[in-house]
Length: 270
Length: 281
Ligand SMILES: Nc1ncnc2c1ncn2[C@@H]1O[C@H](COP(=O)(O)OP(=O)(O)OP(=O)(O)O)[C@@H](O)[C@H]1O
Ligand SMILES: Nc1ncnc2c1ncn2[C@@H]1O[C@H](COP(=O)(O)OP(=O)(O)OP(=O)(O)O)[C@@H](O)[C@H]1O
Ligand SMILES: [Mg+2]
Ligand SMILES: [Mg+2]
Image (cartoon, rainbow over all chains, first blue to last red):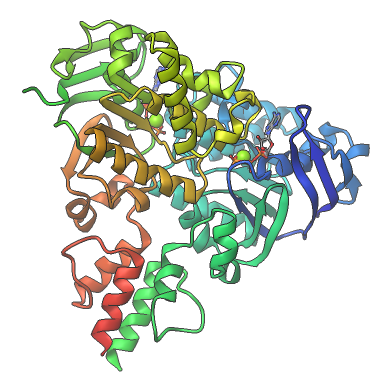
């Protein structure tokens, strides 16, 4: 679905933000992109939407080279919630913010209404329907950008730091939404420093450092590789750290606290 | 002596808002404490912080009642300039506070404003850049940085001022995990070395619980819980208010209920593993 072929990107100020990135994401995969500040994660994601074009190399999205595809046609396929919601919100009201793209993509008024209701309900924004997006709290703004893109059901969903400003209840809902997208066969890319949030989702994890991909594999493997993680300034999930501190342990790390509890109870019975 | 921060029966309603964003809020923070403020998204945390650095009521209109005092002086009666020296403030969105042409100038901005001599300014800027791990970005343009780098620049600007009260609105939200850990260690160190008081809004509690003296939980504008992180996280109400119980604490709690773990302190993953191993012998 997404393919980076030896992509290098140099910013106008001379900073090389991507340095020979080769990466393939199949349709239906859930991928977490992690790595230190300035590693190039946001730059990479902006290449998928065609917002940035590679200095050298190629980015192919759904079979089309982004250099030869209009941003408009890509944007129907790829929905992105950017890291900073202030760059994405521009309508007079929350409701209008959500309806805008839907109308643009030719949804019927009936369907627009339904999707808007769904999104506002899911993310607890119903009471702000008529408010200006500018008066929302930080977390509310973020959820509005998430609701906006999920409403038009893109094949590829890209979330850049979606948990910023979210309490644990909202995070749980968001994790549930990502799992739902996965079962619906969507391609999902989540950029996040929130390792505790990513871990229970058990995504494929791609680790970036200085514009390069330095690690790639299932969460259970990548998150046990302390040397790799430390080199990219990523922390280990708490449950993986706990797991690695045990002398007797199950074959793979615990996915969540409940999973761990079950194992310890079983063991204590013996 | 007055406490560093005193909030009395504070209420604030934004113009035309259906209800108060902060409602009858009381809080006392002695000098040198690290207090974490948590609660559901939209419950009024950022609004409460704005009443401490004076943005409310000086820059925002709305219905204001009650009183906030910093070091004994009423915020309402102080001018913004004095407040900005006493109270360091990190905005939730770093783009709201970086605007100079280079990172270095940005970090120096507050110091320049209060007339710190050049040599001392140089020193304090360099130190702040080093503490936040961004010395190599000194000559870069702040708006041409990644979001996490921007947050680090904003933090450096706040800490370079060495304010006696530091307010941080989700300071680790854009930081990579290890930098977030470094920041928490830095907060603990500044409290120890300089007696700095911290009020930190944070959803990622896994890092902060170890250094925080107190956790205050807010819901719908009101204070609903207050206590040590241990007491609140082991209590039954925290989850209801969206306070994230770290995974290892969730497990510690579950195992404790079955008599398989202790509850004296919040254990780190390593400590809980050691305890469980000990039991197995
Ligand atoms: N607009 C820009 N102009 C010039 N350089 C930039 C710009 N935006 C980012 N950079 C630089 O490009 C590199 C990669 O930045 P990017 O935003 O992709 O990092 P990131 O991995 O998303 O980091 P973070 O975790 O902080 O969000 C960094 O060195 C950054 O300073
Ligand atoms: N400038 C404003 N004008 C009107 N209403 C506002 C304004 N800023 C915030 N609000 C509203 O006040 C309430 C509290 O917002 P606040 O930003 O204090 O929440 P918060 O607890 O910081 O949330 P988050 O964790 O999402 O940042 C919310 O309902 C929000 O929509
Ligand atoms: Mg980024
Ligand atoms: Mg806030």
